[in-house]
Length: 350
Image (tube, rainbow, N blue to C red; front, top):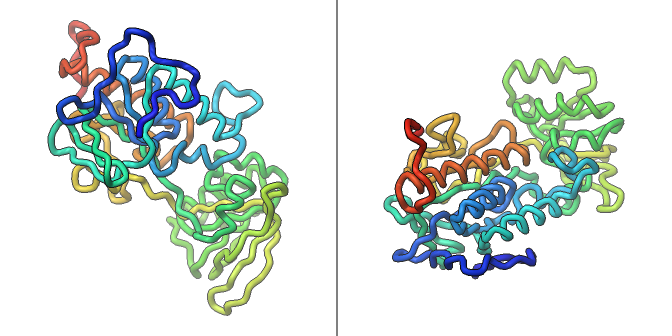
């Protein structure tokens, strides 16, 4: 069920104590939920802090980066790196310091008393003193077969991540809200033309975002239409879309080199509803802008489960680091693990 160092080639240091079993009588020091940039960075820091973290992969192992192709904006890789390769490097790095991995996702959580009780895939129970939630947010998709096949091959859910690859091309954006208008406007920095495809007669975006998009000479609109099929190959990318007019039912071919799906994200936080404080969209609320602490003592959150603004790999990694440091400080102050005392005069973070 768990794996200590998958593919890492490293073994735990000889003589190091065995990690807790994860039972109620012998709970883990920390469990990390999610294996994207936030979760894996938290694992690196927690493992180096001698907390013996257990990382539960989640339903999208590797997070959003595992679904992308080339990543050019993650520091340290001047020629870029493939998303799955970057995730694999991070997994090996965390494993090197003693992170254990568990397949599956948390389907239930009892955070009413410590140690916290987690249920993985509906059958495995894990008990832990602290919890770092890095379960991310999943992009809402159109629900057609061809988008799965061409995701990362001309089809994207992140203009900031992939817009550069479409320099000099005509592309399309699906959506009618603020996110779609923001993506379309941003993409005009690279594309020669951006066409927004929306299934309704009117946009749902705020007036200021609509005005900004409508006033951009590079942006055009197709209303009352949906994407029935994305045409292209993994090798050659996208060449066109089949658009269905919802009023006439007519299908037309629309030539384009790229498609950005901007119909929102769903945070993977359903297992904590009613326990953790969530906002109206389901993102986890934090107690303080300079902390990853939630409304429950000993539970920390990071990455896209919290952040609905930036949603970048590097910002997720940063908050993963913060969560591990916050968690370690909390454990130390609670005397669950004795690493060091708070420096004299340092006050506990509110």
